[in-house]
Image 1 (cartoon, rainbow, N blue to C red):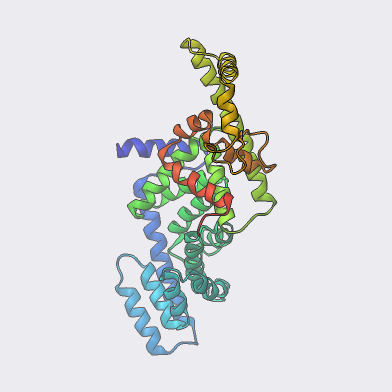
Image 2 (image 1 turned 180 degrees about the horizontal axis):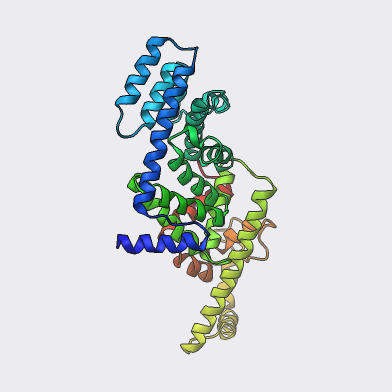
Amino acid sequence: MRIGRLFQAALCLMAMGVVFIGLTDSADANDQHSEKVKASFLAHINSLGSISTAQKAAIAKTVSEINSDFSDTLTDSLILMYPQYSDAIAASDVSGGYERAIELLSPLQHSEDKYLAGDASFYLARTLMNEERFEDAMPCLQKLVGDLSSYTVHQGSAQYYLGVAQAGLLKNQEATESLMRFLQFNPNAPERLRVSAWRQVQQIQSIQKGKLDDVYQRMDYSRRRLELVETDEVTQAEQDKIVSMLTKLIKEEEKKEVSSNVKKGGPSEESKKSSGQKQAQSKPSQSKNSQKGGMSSNPNGQVVRKSYDDSPASPWSRLRDRSRDPANNAVKEKLPARYRDIVERYTEAANGTGEK
């Protein structure tokens, strides 16, 4: 099973022009990068005149004794060198402290100390990703896999987050390439990230333009921007696409329903209408009684007939009116389970009733 998946990954990478160098070589390259960052960081510490000899010795001893994950040690060492960095890291780890974390980490990503800039950029990007602020996280992530890659050991996680952000921004081709690179060059990454990356690649590759997967990816994109109060032209354009695509899918489902009824020998729409008219003509007294009040829930005692055409002008109102339409329900029933939460959250955001 594992070999089969690796073979599939290799084929995808070769199709994208990425050379598959093998699992062992990938692991070695990752380990070599970590050792290279560790050695360069020690040299960097010794060159600084802003910290004492005792601090240099303490940091060097701690770094030299680490034989596994160097990322936490690098962060701890930077906190010793820059005490104010401690508050920024603490804020990024506190639930609900993202605003404070962003405030403290943002200036540090431009630090002259490239190691501090790289570490701060990672924690800032992680905080922004947790808040689904993909647009803001992108510059940090691109620097971490680019100019700052030699100064951080978080480039693997940054590659994963980059793919997730690109998918969230509807950049599916770039997202696939980023996630596949993450899978290739980070075989020792946490299993949850590798499984998540592989599933996202499969989901992206299954998307067909104009079909349900495409609709609901765009729906999630629009839902996220609405929750961030980003109601600009980009968001509105995506909303228009969603309405258009859903309307087309609903019409297709309506045709299937009619075709299915004809094949089963069921009554056609015309015969249903004719039957309904005859029933109405044969019971005039009941119609009159319903308009006098009493049994009517309408305060004016009049029957209200709801149609899609007489609903408010907003395309969202027309879309919501279809909630009781059999064809629309048929489309919903065909939804993959993983998209149902997206649809509910999107509807709440579009109606302005959702909570952040």
